[in-house]
Length: 366
Image 1: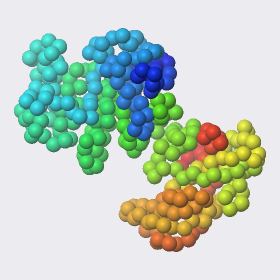
Image 2 (image 1 turned 180 degrees about the vertical axis):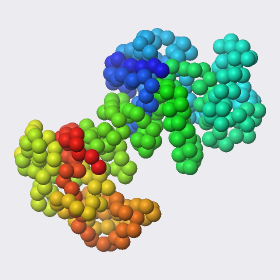
Image 3 (image 1 turned 45 degrees about the vertical axis):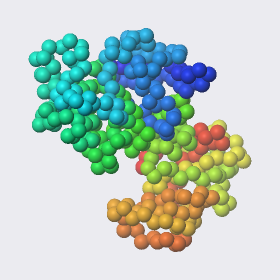
Image 4 (image 1 turned 135 degrees about the vertical axis):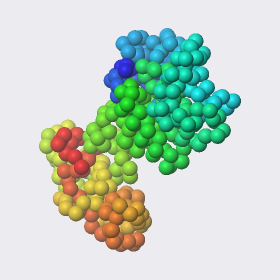
């Protein structure tokens, strides 16, 4: 296990700066996920930790050691790529043991470590096969096995499930999570899929345009986002946003004016709010489908998605074109219906004109 730390890390390509002074300390033994939209810098940041990208300024520390100028092979890391990167002419066993053989390990040592990794990943029956005779999920397990045999201080995963179909993604997601529990190793995982981030991570790092927007546990980010970007990115379906006006603010609540000129009281620390200022009200789809609440919002339903256990309603509400409501699977609401949503004020979110959150009480949960 190893702690990973970045200190004021920058990455520039010529005059273009893509990583902007990132400071973070990632605890030993945790499963950390870098998440964000395409182009946010998550893979670049991972490659900076791996030593595959040179750092323009700042430093990287692994297990308390400054490895900024250390070659990738000597950093104590193992990386699993999106493309598998298996040698087609080698068997599964040869692929898994390749790094050890290049490092001068004996045949006996290689065979022993490959055998242990194969048992962990349920690859024992496939050791004599070549990659062309494997499924996508099996190839990815071989790539993970190649990392395991090196016994690294840190595992790095760069969108390893992107090439798999939906069912295999779920299966491999569970296997990687189980592997982390068995190895108790430090793992850093890159994905653009916030569902993967929520289900796998001990800690999530949300990135946007080369900046760290927020770091925290999945539920911390879900219930207490720092800003509009994190609130909209974490959660599926995404949070609904309605523009409102602040009429009164205190350290316990904010009185807001809704688009229909009615008012509502939201449980947030709005002591810095200015009366008359614009704000954004955030409502999770599951909270919009509540049976009880403190204020109502009218909505006309345009689309209904029935998924069995849940029904999702999409419509125009509060000036938002695609407002989403999550209800039980047997909900009878249909296309074209106009209904009143009952909203529990204590579960609402509020963001100022700059997109920063007025923080909710820590006791507020779904």
